[in-house]
Image (tube, rainbow over all chains, first blue to last red; front, side, top):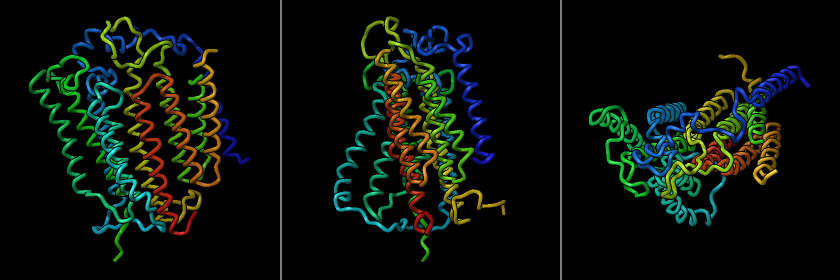
Length: 239
Length: 112
Length: 83
């Protein structure tokens, strides 16, 4: 074995040994499964009074968009930067055509994808809209919408989605997120505060601004990843 | 037990980045590292006999033991950021292939 | 050993073996397919650890999007004559 491989093996073995030995030391690290939640920050998040006040049934949603809504704004920014980077590296020239791969799709793929596209799109919209009641939310729902568009790309050789509409949708959703946060600053005390009424836990129209924010995040993530897929599948039109 | 498996997966991914010369396999190893790390972070918040953090009944919320929801919120964001990183890394790999004609980093040479 | 312990042991060993094969694979497309398989096993592990949000997100992203991005990169570079 070469010297570089041997050194790499040694370094990674030492790292694994160091981490595992620290895991077994119960004073620095709690044992697996024996955590007391009152010692952690989550004990305050799971307080009964907080849950009735926030109004969301899905506690992870209440944390992602409510208690830590500013981190979600940062994550949306990181996705925007990566989508911008992919678009800069690929789409240089003006005219673009579909990538010329040397196979053509099957008849069953072409027909069956029309049915599946509607089903996947509906399931994605359902998961986005019920993000505060059932598991899911804006992020998996948005990527399901992007998967539906990916299916259309795979099924037809010459299909290209309307990328201009997607870019406008993505920018509008991102700006509306910040606008709603600023509305919270104006109408109530701090940025991204929940200024709509909470309602009863379990209804569709409950939990204040959480459904609105999740719809915006879902649309933004879906259109961004569709733009990335379109950039991967096109090339310059060398006419 | 899941924690030991997560650490071994993370360390194997690190070994894959150090040893491979092919850009595509380096990106695969990066994704393997991210999977191991996400598994480890979620396993920190697990409680035996806890239930998933969704309110499903109208009892008092203090009587049920919920699994810690905060690591799950952090990992939710981290998975989506991993997709963005992988997309950008694959775009760079495709540009490397277009300019130099190979994916092997030993043949690419110095910056020109 | 409860059922949870046995299941987590089996899952852990399977994931470590498949990751090892994925890193030392000969072709690039095999490594991508094994990565997709590790992703699916990680979804099962997430459901066992009582995290449904994370499981749905990883299932959609790991199976559909990351694998297809890798395949599209390999497809575009294959037609120029390199494996």
